[in-house]
Image 1 (cartoon, one colour):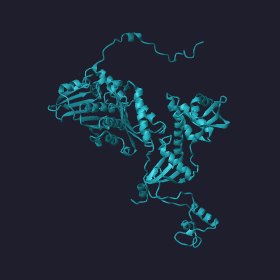
Image 2 (tube, rainbow, N blue to C red; image 1 turned 90 degrees about the horizontal axis):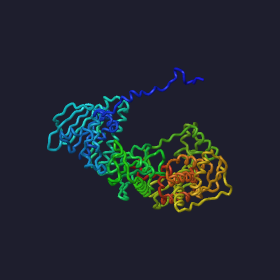
Image 3 (spheres, rainbow, N blue to C red; image 1 turned 135 degrees about the vertical axis):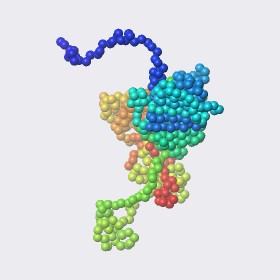
Image 4 (cartoon, one colour; image 1 turned 90 degrees about the vertical axis):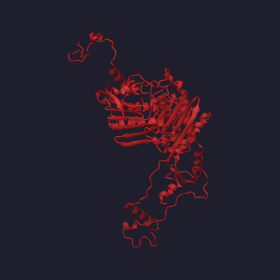
Length: 617
């Protein structure tokens, strides 16, 4: 029987043309094509070209670098520096491939400069109109112009000591590359990021950046912390943590944000190895691991971290654009970052960054429905309302609801802790009351403290479980009647596979058929809990943690889920004694400034901020 795919209109692969293949001989590529291929590796977009040019300026010993862009670098990139400059012969040599002044002999593992391959200038010149002008100190200036790899002219140039490079019409004659570039706004954002990273790496160099005639950056010489604050956010002065630690010949310095001072994107994380800006997955992963259970998974900390490694312990020549590095001992670097950051975060664990809100006078409004309800209650209770400022009963002369809205009745009584003098000297103050059965209001010597009782207790339970687990003695409560929880079979499989780790945290489970789990004991810290909800959340957590996480990391994630179920829920009324006990435990518990999801557990209004609310200052 003839196949249904054998018709004359069926699409069949074309036969391979062996004759044509055999006629293709091996040949050397022309220099112009070689440079364009290299440009594809080194010059991906305007930001890539700008990065290479600024790195050259820094390697030339510049004390000030000026950058000018038009249309995000698509039309113009100009970099001017006051570095060493080049003679005409050196300029011609710099425009040839693999010519460099930055490599000390043949010791490629001893490179301390940003660039060293000698590919940047010829690669950029092959895909743009490039004008190179330079003048060494004590000599005359010289100029060379190149149009997409073709030398146009050269001659004397007037400029101060240093180098000026103009790159115009990037990829104008390479439409296949040009069409993949993004709009000018996106390209400008990438250029700004590249300049920020290099400026942060070299705080001893001044920078200016102009875009489309507008001054964007003006950076004077400064100490590294000052430069970081200028480029990230000045709020790091209040919400940042300084880092300085060393181990086994490695050193880590920089600044990180409090867990509660975070962003929705990881666009303000800057990582450096031996002052070289990198985007290394090992370093990013270590930074993320240091914030585990301190920050929500969709939130990101602000960080600028500088890792110093002996030159023979790191290979910087593993990526064409030199944005990635390879460490001889990656576990030591990862351990230094995670350990150093966790130690710093633990030391500042009581701090919380509360987002400041603009204060405005409250505009009180009432509705007719509220007025009628108030009057009805007043009449039914036999306690007539009294006109504001008089002793006249409301019924005297009041004929409409519009007039009755001025009435008031005695304020309802409510529980409150009487103020005492002086206020005890506790960081979180003493409890005065509870709002919406969710927030504890406390008075401290320097202001008013508001605590989210669920978020705070969630952190306390997690830290108790952690301490007990490390001590090998998590208290558990056996259930008088084991509880059967129905789940999907895959969820049961996940819980069954993790039964040993869960038992180590006080949760004893047993398989009870294909689609059910038997709960025999729970951690004592949980008390009475919703076993079905807990197991469903744990199964989802284990499914998400299926990647290559360490056992400790997985246990911490699972413990956080258990703690969430065992904490004091919003809506529970607490006595004053219970509220104060919660405050005192928060003051001595590590990382109590934020819950397991990275949200703040408390905020404080200082006396000055309260006075501003009432116009006293």
